[in-house]
Image (cartoon, rainbow over all chains, first blue to last red; front, side):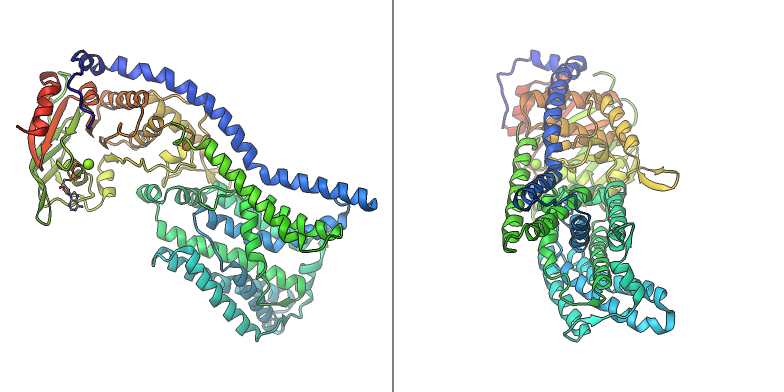
Length: 368
Length: 251
Ligand SMILES: Nc1ncnc2c1ncn2[C@@H]1O[C@H](COP(=O)(O)OP(=O)(O)O)[C@@H](O)[C@H]1O
Ligand SMILES: [Mg+2]
């Protein structure tokens, strides 16, 4: 207890009069806080941009390398840019869903195989619909069916996590297995070829040298950016990731939010699966297998914290491009492909270190 | 301080009891809070202070007794119901989303929307920032950068944000459990001045404190609990630190 008997009675009268109590602290607190604000926000802004800085640095490195080593150019080459963009599509779509989940404080390990499931379902569905609907409508029907089927494991993830309080890591790990098994069963253990020229054109055609699948992915990611940054759903997602207790007390329906969240991330993987099938004119259950960790890496490199509460879609776009540039760039300059793993790993670690340094610097509660 | 305690009380607690099995955490306790009045709740650890405010704010269902708001008997099944009736509790962990701005915290769960390009619904950040600036100015809290997350602010300022949210949504009674306990001295003063502002706006305030300086600085009345019962109730103007300590420890 902090009771003091020796407290002079005078302080009673003084503190009790509002003008003293009210005026004195205001003038001291506000300017100091404002000054600190500005310094902190500068550091935050630099840290927020780190993925784009990484990207610029990587491009400079590969460009110099190409020029010094064999007198070529890396970045001024249209073919390279197209290849990198195509390369980034599927990991970026998975990472977009993963961004929402990670901001909420969760993780979705099932995205890779949900993508494979959607690729297989899209292929079967388009083949089945071709005769009845004609090629363009069959593609549309296949797309809708594949994305709807992809949403089912997302729905189950959401139920497990929101109603049954299963930790996201465990719930989505279980769904990883289920989606994987179902995808392989549906594919009969092999890849499922699609014969639909419209679908193949979408997967490989270009609009003024920009691949269609890159345009589709860009539009989709832009919509997701809007959803995260401009809507209540996005706002509540950030609040839940920072302080679920506070979100609940503010009247946010956490259960329904989490349910919609995991359906959303599964839909992102579903779209990735359909675009994969379009590009290769075939669906494969293992299509997204190597991409799951890339998706988490892209989100982390993009500035999100695995503790939840922070991250942006634009950051994730940069993160996905960083990974794509490393992977493609190392092949381009003819380095053994295993260096990819090392480089991506190093970038992830640097990213997390920056995140922690920033956290230490800007944690309002620690510097009282 | 003579302006208070006239007319009908805002809040009346009548013979309220709360038993946890054999533990009588609160026994037949009665107290009132008037508009524009600050009532301090004091007492040793385990005296029943937290139990009392949790019963008032809808966290605990009382075992017996009655709560009246402006003369009308009320019961709350959840804290949300109490909040809807204008009783807001400022929790010690503050219930803020650290990564969001002051405005976003004030509007959390009830965000205003506007249209962009005439059709696209988007969060109305300008409205949130403007409302936040106005509300915080009412509390004598001035900050130029409304786009900073609240994690950038100090403990006292965050306390002000939590209070600002209650004020914006027009809470009539604010309940605070040890609002100054975790703060440094300048920040404690800031919170005391916030309580003065709430009083000046005609709201009722109940605050728990162990700190007699704080209690004497801001309260109109003090209610002292001991082992779940009322040990004494005094007007601050008519009592001394000594007397309050004696009420708390018994004797
Ligand atoms: N949820 C609970 N279950 C059982 N006993 C409780 C509970 N909450 C409080 N008590 C008991 O009620 C008494 C009053 O506690 P509390 O209201 O927290 O006191 P204070 O806030 O004044 O320190 C204590 O004996 C405490 O152990
Ligand atoms: Mg207590």
